[in-house]
Image (tube, rainbow, N blue to C red; front, side, top):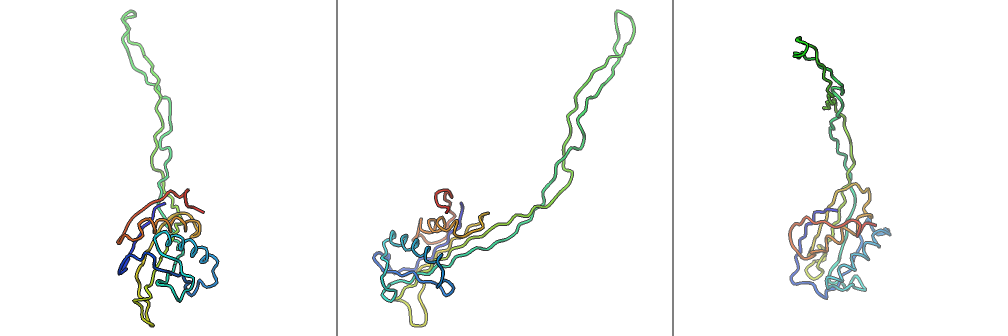
Length: 198
């Protein structure tokens, strides 16, 4: 499984031992899926050296997750191959001089000619591709104002494939984001899907 990862860390210092709370977006407040993803992301943040806060109001960072699935159809023109000329046995007659009889006689040879294939026509094929995306944001409470949260980190993972599900590939996307969590910039990365597909 291949993904494109973009990361924008903007920490004043490495946030080791800083506390965080993963909070739902407005449309995720009643989502069991979000609760599952929140647990998984929290475990990965703890591996990075952060500490899960017991109280959201006490957390140094607020963490949000946005994720989903978009689909698109791709149509391509496909060549249809077929037999243009059928295979056949061909008989050829040549004239040879017979020294013993003193005359010209016909001489036959048989040859197998294989069939010839080429493009006979075209047809269209339509395939559906699914674009899965994950956006993780961390907001620094210290640098925030009452009106505006300060974005200290943003990581985005996008991946396209034939799996029509976000949950099926979510663990893969999480792992690819956290593989180089603090590295700034873009990265194309891959993972063996059998190690993380649900």
